[in-house]
Image 1 (cartoon, rainbow, N blue to C red):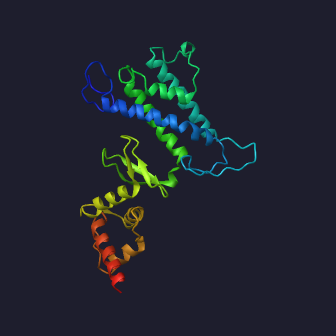
Image 2: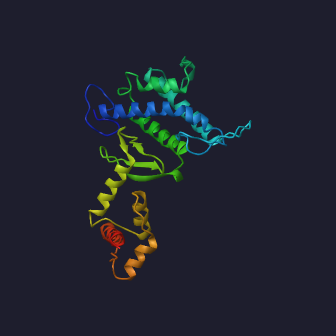
Length: 255
């Protein structure tokens, strides 16, 4: 039998391999941890960024409710309870046989630790559904405009995102915690040490800004106009821009 998620060969009737089982359980536990900030985000006056240690909230009740967050909580709750019924050998749609009185957080934790998590029939399907819900929860708690791609995980190559003030980032797939600046510099090294990496002036400016190097789109096009920077059919080479940028910085420091 093959793993329903990554297609790795499994034995003993397992529908998920050991790695995917750990990822599935980890995602369920992460969602359990996110239940409280998700409920906090129901308040429409809450400052965006539910994972932030400091959140701004007015003290004037009653406050409007974010219906999109309410729908997401309901969807997560229904999916978690449906998953538990599958794990417990009950018809997933027969809610009348579900005697659990625990809340959403406890249900997610119970599912993560269930002995049949990697052996029940639809494990791969529910793993994909839970992963999709986890992405939606992350979007609610940390809006996309506050987070940007900073580079890939050194362990599993998953693209990581982080906010402007984040010092550490945790991979959503393998759970590895890494310093955000290290991820940024590793991405910059990959881009600048490979002359086949090309991009537009705006793309290069944005990628360098993420890593802490400032070069505007206008500066890049000016270098081209002055004959300092060649432009290829698919854009500018990151390595060429990097060499010019470092050279200009060195010239300034000498002066």
